[in-house]
Length: 162
Length: 116
Picture 1 (tube, one colour):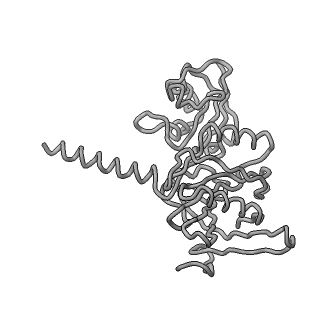
Picture 2 (cartoon, rainbow over the protein chains, first blue to last red):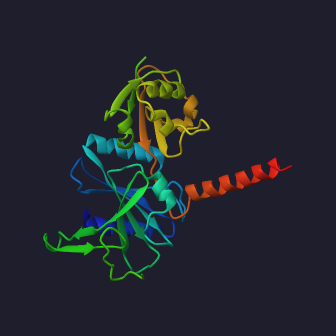
Picture 3 (cartoon, chains in turn green, yellow):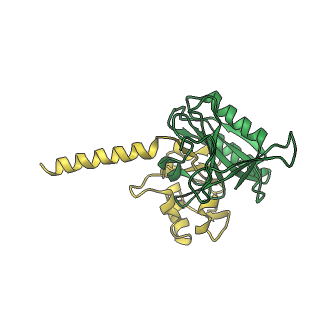
């Protein structure tokens, strides 16, 4: 399960919308071992492509060192798919190199519908997990849960086309 | 000659969990061979079967991406600091699919020429 603040989700979706139709990408850092994403870092898509994203290697070095200095780690690694569903592609799986991270996918194929899903990708195996959006600004206990898709517990997202 | 090498989480299974290891070598290729003698399998995760630096990792010498320094031929000096990070990339359609198509095209081309 990924628990993430509404303000961060909004910032990620805004980034994805802004860069549409190119794919957008970035990181949400959090304290090591906390599993809590706290610091949103939008990254450049060095590939500037509608179907591919790639962190700029020098920007990545800078950001990874900064996280190291602050005792943070990449809790969330996100990118957008701009014409297809928010599900990891074979490319995403072959590149996934942070076994501790939540891989968050945003689809911007529908201009007025928010589509976010989260996955663990370890040794080539994709496991979808629910996303719990915490709306601290309204009420610290208010929670909006997204239980998407196929695995492991099957709960249909009400807006899903499936 | 001691060169410090920072190992990313995903490769720490090869270093007994160590985040930083030391090695030696005149070039990056030499250094990886040296590391592999103590951390068996590590080199195979960084270098492809054809002897090129793997697409899935970024390797830095001090503050430079090693791809701009000659990749595996990059010259190293005592006191250099090497950082290895997983490359972060992907997308709806991209490198893996393109590579699969390219290798399929290449194998078709090889099969075609072998038949002559």
